[in-house]
Length: 180
Image 1: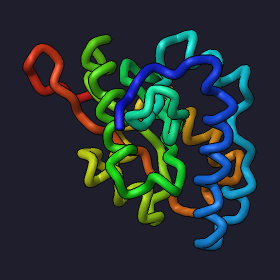
Image 2: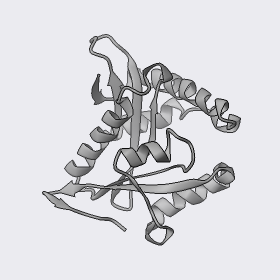
Image 3: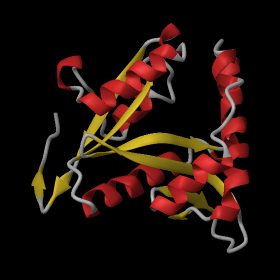
Image 4: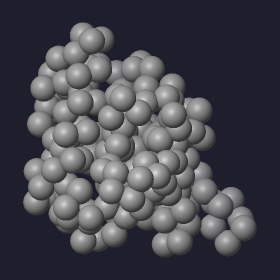
């Protein structure tokens, strides 16, 4: 598996990956999440243009994406907006490779951490991200832009299930940094 920057022609596949990954939420009693539409092509295009979208592809040069990650810049950190892997390719380290690529990008741009918001009790969410080096953030250290993301999520009804903000501290210039 290799990670590369997403291309505009990848975007319909990213939507399909998101739909396929959403099915897993239906199986654990979260049909509203399963039915949530993926980001529109126009929104995904913005991430490609900004250089903050990566895809995982197999060794075949013509292979399409099997996973993707898009990221924002929030509070000086690189924020993982979405990371999804097609269920046929789960449990193969694809998500971790995508997260590691986002971490490399964060170090390159001088961001001290990766952040994300996720479901606290879904096994492939917060417990998985802990294994990838993230820690749950105490509410007191959540900075304004990340707090606004959580408020938006709550307004959209996502707080029906417990959610958390998480952070993975990075080393910039060989020194560990923390943010917030």
